[in-house]
Length: 90
Image (cartoon, rainbow, N blue to C red; front, side, top):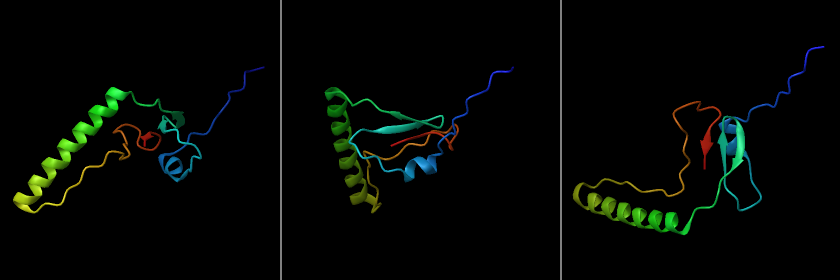
């Protein structure tokens, strides 16, 4: 008797983005599977704030020079270039 394969349907990026998570944890979609993300370290958080501030200041100066309207987002979702249907990080 052949062994039966267990099939778990993959979650799509659109399905993942429509989900509401009821905790303060962060999740990402990796190859169709929802995976919890580790919390960032204090060093990572410090670097993120410093880079965000520098980027904001540079964009403000650019706007003064040429009137462009750009903004920096610290929590933008990332959809990698491979398998766009089943990978997403937010």
